[in-house]
Amino acid sequence: MQDDGYFDDRVASRYDESSADMFDPAVVEPAVDFLAEIAGSGRALELGIGTGRIALPL
Image (tube, rainbow, N blue to C red; front, side, top):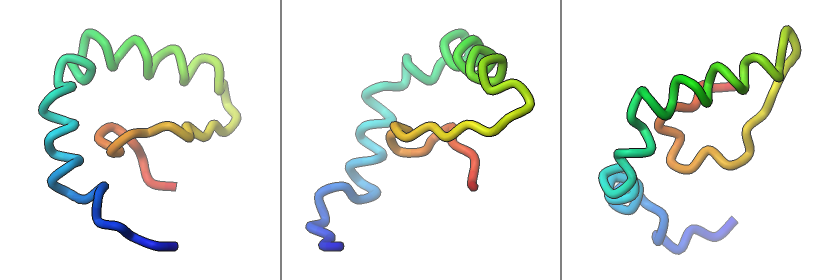
């Protein structure tokens, strides 16, 4: 895989800063609760995790 350097830590930091309102607990908590509910006791994989700010390792 070729790394063109475009999506580096600086870009991730700017993205996180510019979209901070999306990471407000009032937004994140209901989303996490919903995803946990639909996953139930099974597994779920979120393919669009952005910078991984709220992701869990596999």
